Image (cartoon, rainbow, N blue to C red; front, side):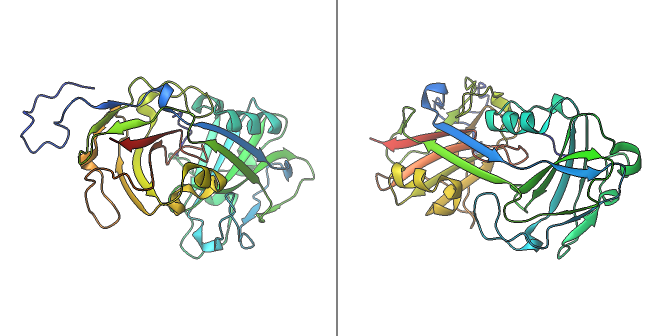
Length: 307
């Protein structure tokens, strides 16, 4: 089950070796470089019949949380979390503030429906150790259940907040307005990192302690680093921040799971091309993300400039 994650070491290899991490001192991405973010979520709680093997359908879902057009077959993962100590309003507040942690999840199950599937029953979900049995686990009187749909990139497409009750519904249908998301970003809040022209340096975020909302993060809790070039100015990106990745003219990414520093020579674009540095054209951003996190936006973003 994928759970919520919160978002330099010395080199033993000589600098002229083939090790891509063997480089000059990395540029430090610290709290003072980070952007600002506010996030607002809304979803009405749904009373689900307790102990019922309810049907979950996303056949009518045509727009995801970010306002992006989707097809029902884009849903690739379903997750169900029992947040035993949190009421629905507290769940929304914790996600918005970045304070929902693994410790809040008393039980979790997931499923990966076959491509083309638009509905499942709850007993088609599973733990790592066995099948999820609604008759045993889906009982009322304690907390909230979060039902989450994710796409192939592990981004949340929509969610519902469920409270098991006698006489509740036995069919859960996702619609375009099942949940809403509003993002507001300040990309110029933090100080930019300056990269010498023609260089592809290493980056170190080991001292990063907070995300764009000010919520605490673990520096080794990110799993992806991305650098992207945009034609527009920061203000134009902020105006459509929910679609930030789609606005990029070029992107290079790499996995950084468990790391707190990495050489940008490891970055690759979709065609397998390596990152070779930035230019003075457009806007350049570096962000640290967590594909397995329920964060809805990069936890940390810094602008990159050149001299």
